[in-house]
Image 1: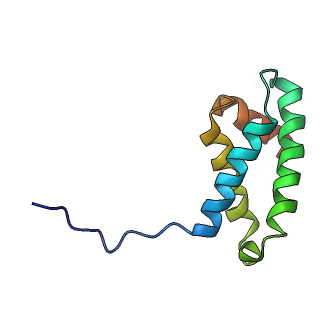
Image 2: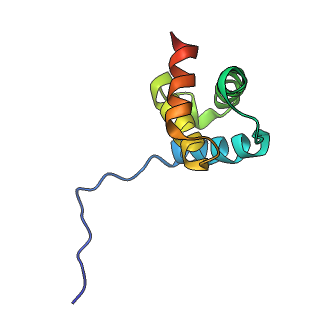
Length: 97
């Protein structure tokens, strides 16, 4: 007996998925063991700026909204598991407030 494929399941946007992977790999490459508090906020702010600059050079992402790109970037950072999610959320909140 085989499971049938769910034809109603949405296919992930491959361009945003690539942005997520880029974010994860790039964040890990720039991450160190001393990311906490103000250091984390500064690094995250710098990284978000870099990520958006990178995204704007990608023709496949030009039609994506800022929210879609931000979601892909944050998903990549969170998936990297380099910093606890609650610390990242707190830093993001301080940056955007």
